[in-house]
Image (cartoon, rainbow, N blue to C red; front, top):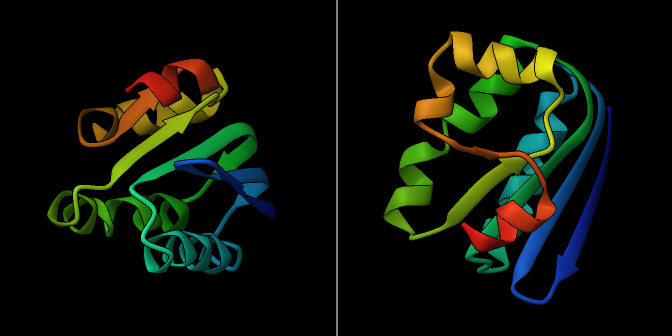
Length: 109
């Protein structure tokens, strides 16, 4: 997995590429920590290049849901391919997390 963190005005964009598995999910969690520690209120996950996500990767997002709510953080995942998005839907995570089609929608949520 490759990560790139981008500050774009009021948004912190985390671009994720490749497979999000048990070993790489630690880095994703750290990137989210970086955004929260910087006091960013709008965290966007660019999932356009995610090929696969394991339960550990999903766990990174699920474990942060209450923290996002408690700190009024707008957290949005965008650009997931159909296969990865289906994993979120099967587990019902699309009801707990904001998942949208593209960057423009993510910025307007």
